[in-house]
Amino acid sequence: MSLTLVYFSATGRTKRVAEAVAAQLDGHYDCIDLGDPSFKGRAVEGASLVVACPVYGGRIPSLVRDRLKQLQFSGARAVSIVTYGNRAYEDALLELNDSLREQGAVAVASAAVVCSHSMLPSIAAGKPSATDMQNLSVFARFARESLSAQQVREVVVPGNRPYRQWQKMPMTPVTVGTCVHCGECVRRCPVRAINPADPSQTDPSLCLLCMRCVHLCPQKAKALPAAAETAIREKLSAVAAKEKENQFFFALPA
Image (cartoon, rainbow, N blue to C red; front, top):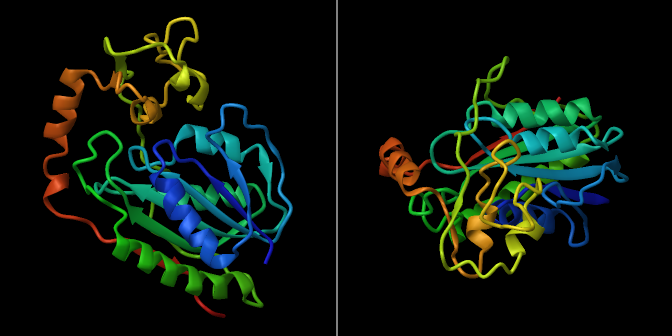
């Protein structure tokens, strides 16, 4: 099958999940990185897609929503995946599938996968695990059947319309004294929110709080503000208590 992987993965975990599924479906596939700072929209050739992104506040990131609108899929069948940090994925999977439909694709299989939390990696630490990766291989084999079925049927997933209201926390990562101005965070920021002349300055109106700059900095010079991290840790303390299960959905046969 002709396959295209479309993904946004700020910290690499979503990409790992998506690539595992795509590799099982087709060893050779094209990639579109929605988080590429130089992303440009286009029409996508091919009959099948894997589309993956993280969950932010029970929704798909605004970057994903906006950049999917710049792609045209022309009747492609899709496997959709959202990853979340053990709290809840709420309306994100439904919103992702709706976004795909608006661009001409039909989601025929979907998954919600637990990954370690981007802000507090101690929550769901080590996820996705080796067992998770094995389960994703099984999911991909079933998804292949949905992609190749004679009749196209859209998968039914949990969620509500209208989608839940959510706003990003009013903060950005801060820079500590170990910064050597290497510029890696500037080059890799998906929305170019970091000032090239002074990497300690981040535009809060652009920042997604995706945590890419924190995770990729070779000097560990980026972090959440200490007070914010403490507040988030307290808020999510209940989330860390019990690990959620991955969930998989397939279109019902005709």
